[in-house]
Amino acid sequence: MMLYRQGKVPGSFYDGFGQEAVSAGPAWAMHAHDRLCILHRDLAAHLIRGVTPARIFGQYMGRAGGITGGRDGNVHFGERKVGCVGMVSMLPDMMLVAAGLAMAFKLRGERRAALTWFGDGSTSRGDFHEAMNWAGVQRLPVIFVLENNQYAYSTPTATQFAVDPVERAAAYGFPGVSVDGNDVEAMFEATRQARERALAGEGPTMIEAVTMRMHGHAAHDDMKYVPAEQIEEWRRKDPIDRQVRRLQGVGVDVEALREDVRAEIEAAVAEGLAMPMPDGETATERVFADEPALLEDGASRWSGF
Amino acid sequence: MPTMTYLQAISDAMRQEMRQDERVFVMGEDVGVFGGAFKVTDGFVEEFGPERVMDTPLAESAIIGTAIGAAVEGLRPIAEMQFSDFVSCGFDQLVNVAGKMFYRQGLSVNITVRLPSGGGFSGGPFHSQNPEAWFMHAPGLKVVAPATAEDAKGLLIRAVRDPNPVVFMEHKHLYRRVKGEVPEGRYETDFSARVARAGTDLVVIAYGAMVHTALEATADLDGASVEVLDLRSLVPLDEEAILASVRKCSKVVVVDEANQMCAAGAQVAALIAERAWEDLDGPVVRVATPDVPIPFSPTLEQAVLPQVDDVREAVRELLEY
Image (cartoon, rainbow over all chains, first blue to last red; front, side, top):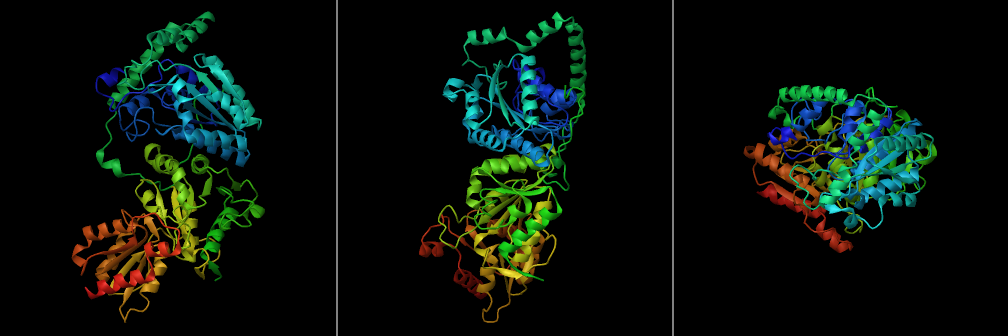
């Protein structure tokens, strides 16, 4: 955000402030050879897969060293070398891509699973239905994580749907579970169980992560449409504060951890700022692939607990 | 060399690739047990089983979207739209997800989307379209449109092996009308143009079914030597072959079965205007379907789709210019 205000981040700035557990829990539960299609508020998932903070800063700033080399912005990326497919802005398109990844696992008889996140607003679109139906019919090893963060831009869920999407899972022939999306361990456990189900050939699971988008849709949005008491209520449920208390309860020195992270971030910002902007001459290159460039397994030390 | 119909050549291409490469599979509505609406995959499910000849729900966005997922994981899906018209329901996945994937994140999407296209048999407004220009305008997609049985097989094999998304326009009206000698085994046809008939006085540039219309229209024109250039591939567009024919013939008629506005032929005409102006001995003439939905009744349909006489008349007029 600081870099955005300094004018170093072109376009707007999107983040997942207040809903960090929604991406961290599931990303930890998925193994290195599983696949993730990551949504724009799920920065933690990229970090857990092993994408370095410096490259993410480079990505936000449109630098040549960012994950897309400046070809796409902010969290619109997926590092293929760690098994991730980046989102497009049309939502929830990646539900179908994730179903396709799972279809490949099933066709090849592999014990692997795919997972994707999608938002409450995108459940109104046809691709939600097509993906839920397809995954149900083919009993695919796929996990759909609904980030119910209460607002699609300014539109509250009451305007978006009459029936909570998690209840619709049963209509497609597989379970939907509603989880406290601000509890990273609950998200981890729900995903771990869904993954076990997928690997056992029992088909898809939908997990609803009930959370709150604590920033505006993007940096330009002051979120005036959200009642102050709603923000206050959710502030008390902050997922990071909750996990900090848990860790302190088991004797972890969280302050020391914070210091480590702060130093790492500062170094990463410096590294990102040192990356050159991409050369305008390259903008018309590499529209087509000359040879296959496919997904590779994640190599993160954190994947696959 | 065996003789095959255009349809048999398409089937043969898929069968050969599926036999040799276990990554290749077909998916679509009614393609399995039923063998496809046009029987292109007739007998496939018996040979390859229901997993590799996948009957899908009626969901075009899902067919293309899941094909993309399977492709980035290393498979080579061939997705059939039952009619090219229905690709509009899968447009977003094809244009936004598949087309931009490699440019944005270096992830190649090896999918082939087969689009049975074209009119001429009273299919009406939703079973007769030629939507190739939609995809020519979408970066990252290749678009090919064979006219002959031999090219249908070779271009399809090339498409299946191409690491990029390829939109394969197969003209329904050619399925059983066009026959020809087709090499056995597996061969690739380059995504480039071919001279269907050499000539020196005028060149007709066409693709798909219109190649046959052009050949018939110019078979006997009072001794005029008319070249017919079959584009075969629209993206990439074989610009050098187009310019070479224009330099040789100096007069050009461009034929599209598609609606004329921003059609493939419009791109060809623009290319010639930019790069071959001084080689021309007359205006570039276009013959295409006017900008109307394709009507159902035979008299109405024939009134809008380019007919042999329409092309012949355009060629005659230009020859006299």
